[in-house]
Image (cartoon, rainbow, N blue to C red):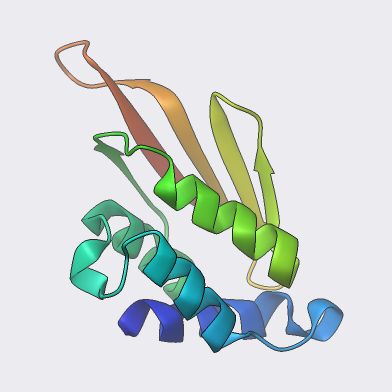
Length: 125
């Protein structure tokens, strides 16, 4: 699964020194329980967002909000692997200190027609 390789690279670059190695088996099991057994099961926006973090590139997008599965995964990474994730309800912020990357995910965005949606912005610090 490409996602696991990407998560492992991001972890190694940012959190391995302070929070130990990345547990592929633990995250694979968590993904399986949430119905994300293959990359194609994951929202495209999420894979794109993580690729931006992995490659230290900036970008942003609007997307249809999910039912919380991705936020749960990010909180799992926070709890089990020390990822810097702050979920405060309306959105969440992730910091990748060694890579110098910040991610903001909003649950209160509006598309060009004014309809509610979610968004992300990946910026360099």
